[in-house]
Image (tube, rainbow, N blue to C red; front, side):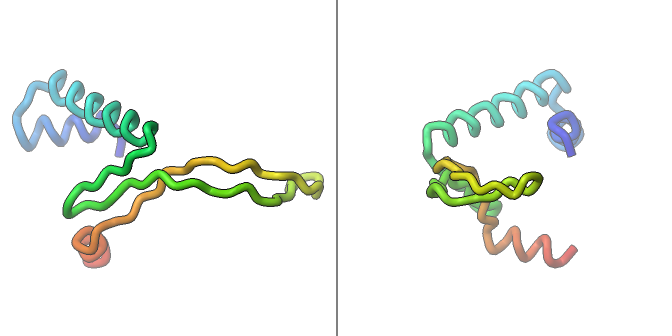
Length: 92
């Protein structure tokens, strides 16, 4: 599913013009990206939580050459689904 598909679904369900539906989807994702970039989490009740967490540095290996290297610490975004969402996915 793409952002365009989401906009189409919004158009079909709510009846908004496609341009407005696309603008809403774009605004939503831009807002989410900005919030996560600031290091804050996003909790959507009944859906799940997007978290920014820090991964510490660690040793890794280049699979092609086999040489060891240090992987620097970094931030990653993770998603933890809500119990309702998990139950819905398991039904299908």
